[in-house]
Length: 274
Image 1 (cartoon, rainbow, N blue to C red):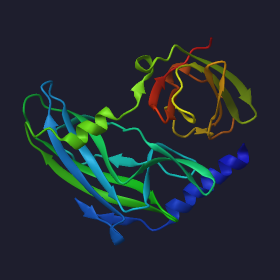
Image 2 (cartoon, one colour):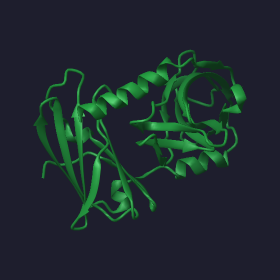
Image 3 (cartoon, helix red, strand yellow):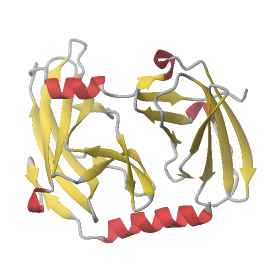
Image 4 (cartoon, one colour):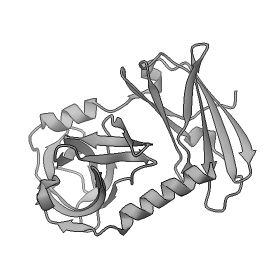
């Protein structure tokens, strides 16, 4: 397990040590690897504004989901300098699973739209000015970290954007809507952290089911879970190792499990002790 952790860490460090490329709004990066822009979107009746970040990748190139797997780095967004920005939520459409150099990675290719749900700071139909720094990793045979500066003015009411709407609709379905009946977690200490075993009573999501386990504390490393079917239940196991390599208290209600399959994706938050 430690060797897997070290391998993942070395891959990430290698990517971060490659030279980053800076770009401006509606940026075009060297060799047209990626074109990044803001879609201004529209203001909903309840005051929320829906915008989007569009990433157009060259053929064969990939970028990563919020939990990228062992062969990737997660996207990072900094909204410093934005105006009339109360809260912002990035909505993640269902990703794909790839195998890169023998390691699983999770992300996107082609033309991707990441929807942004914004609650303005000021009530009423006031414009929003976005200033964002986006850091992503893009990979083909090699991986390159990219830093992009974006800006956009979100007018009111704005036009409903079908590309944003489709991406919102393409996000994983919540557990209760997908027929998840129960999620039971067993936690045991190991020498450098915890081992989490889950039994998920849910419909099959396809011939192959991939599972991702996430914790709110991103400094805790989580191994790639195993996933098998036993008696109709999806049984998974993952190791969790914090920075101090010691067992720790786990809040089961904050464990996030995503199941990806040919028939769609399911987002499950929390599990019970059984």
